Length: 108
Image (cartoon, rainbow, N blue to C red; front, side, top):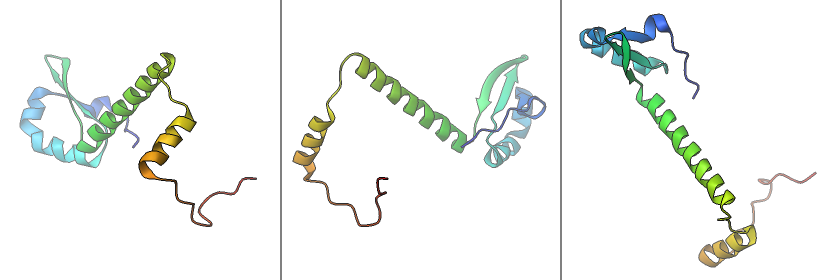
């Protein structure tokens, strides 16, 4: 999901506007992916996101964290050879089933 660009004229609002128009803001969040920045005393105090935008953001953060963990493991030598993984998977789940004819790409 591509996030919409923040529009300063529409997406940065004082907390007094949030208090007066909360229902309208929630409806607006459902129709677009840009966050709404709420200010208090002229400074950013909160950011409102749609559930979809929040899901995308947290999913991306989890993915990046998992990749970083994997890279740290590789740097520290905590790796397992492919043949050892394949052997373990076969022991646990049996031999892989052959692919259905026509579903696998042919090698050039």
